[in-house]
Image (cartoon, rainbow, N blue to C red; front, top):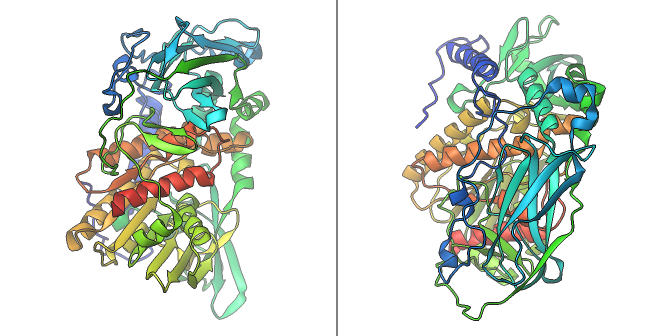
Length: 566
């Protein structure tokens, strides 16, 4: 397991050998990005990942399908085509009609049948076409698909989408409910946009601009604003890195005499300056391309399925969160807005059951606002909490206590990097590993970790090291206090606006970070749980949102409470 090196015995604000090592590693990761792979682990053949599954995975049988599945199409693809991108940059730049078009692309059920039953498998073939309606001849487009029944408030993801490398894509579905269902497909990004995103990440590994505000304690009118970042800015620097938890942070040393490194007061994040940098490395056509995302394909494809005569209820155990799926395909479905996992049973908790489950427990949340949502949900649905601490709106800490049930809710942000669009006190920056090392755990302590949204604008290398450091701290806590419940919440899909947000926070980037998170946790021996927020948010028929609606959020809380209390 990754063990961060101890802090060097050097001056507090000098560049330490460990900090220098980070800069070298960070630079090497960018160099490797250019030569052997991109920042998301794709090989030097310029592979554009979509949903890398094999046909065996796409047609797999889960435990819940042990009653019987009727395989309609069998193995139509021998193996995933890990293709070399055939994008001709000059062709689409000279003629934008070559770009994949969501409104021109089509999809249909491959080898349709007259009669369908629940648990039948179907294959939906997607044909990518350009703006002139011509079939594309190479892959790399980022499609998402869903099967939906508005009448039943039901929806499910495909078992996987296979990029065939020739402009066609196969989405494998299993029918999960009787009645009419509609298939929907969206083009999240055409392959040409993905290539622009990849290049922008390569040229701008950090797509957010920070500054630090230094204020003289003897005179608050004496102040100076300087650039800060996870890599050292030019000139003399102040080093605030926490090497032990892998949290690099630097600011340029103030030029005003007598302003010291210890006088750093606020850290500010700016979209405007970062936006300007993205504009400098992209053309007008590219920026326009980046704004065209999540375009629905207008094919009308539906089917009607009958319930089977041989219906049966598989004998499933209650879900726990110990299994971390390394894949990104479907693991359950919504029906009447209730989540039904394929391989286990998830209990739905009513209001009084939530209170009973959390009685005499401490629920500590570390991370971004998608983790803080759990606290906000509980405060909304459970009355009687008293606010103990409510500091910085974005960073926290926030603490609430329920005297009747002896429940403590606590949230604090995960430390740098963060993007708030305004200034926050540097003294309020806390790192998760340090927080875990200060805790005394036990069966009464439940910890939720949510780190993803703010890291997408930085290096995948930095994210990996931070997660490894947190797992190390979690391991120390579990050895000190067996019985502590520690759960990671993964990334969820989100709405995205203009070109800047596309190269900073698009689902394509989130997807790569999510794969890395799952890989790290699944390889670790540390006993932590995992909530698959990606499957839940992408499967639900509602619109994507960085802060999922109460149906999705309530499902995640049900999963957490099932894990903790059942």
